[in-house]
Amino acid sequence: YAKQVGAGAVMVLPGITGWDSVRELAADPTFNLPILVHPALLGGWLDSKDDENTNSSSHIRSPHGLSHQFLFGILPRLCGGDAVIFPNAGGRFQFTPTECQAVADGCRRPMGRLRPILPSPAGGMKLHRVDEMRRTFGDDTLFLIGGALLEQGPDLEADAKVFAHYAARDRPYTTS
Image (cartoon, rainbow, N blue to C red; front, side):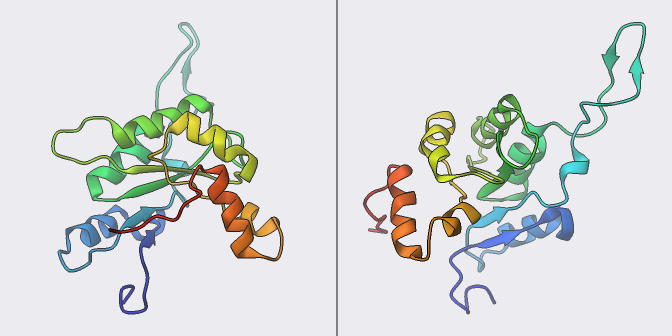
């Protein structure tokens, strides 16, 4: 259906639909659309920094949950995603720069025949941070600037050009 109505990609929320929905789409040879994995409702899967089950004599926290690198970097690759959206440090969510870099590393680290996927830092990012994110995560990053783009003003086309400039993409992409 997505291709029939002209979609150029799909966004899947495995926290709602399950990780197998990503795998099913990726395995379908007729699907042929990029799959963006959205982090909604996955936060509870993460290792808790405030774990109350601490061994008081050694102060060693026993982990309960998945690492940021695995949940947002490696697992989407294993399921066939093409890009993964994750909350970037300094936005609306409490991810640290180290956790965010671990996600990007999980998206790109060598994993046999599995190809890398695009990290997409998001979650309240502002246009003035795009250059910083490009330097941090590299040019092979999918920048998600949603509400901030709409806040720029009423001319969405002009605002998108400003965004492209911040992302060092002053010329449009071509498919040829």
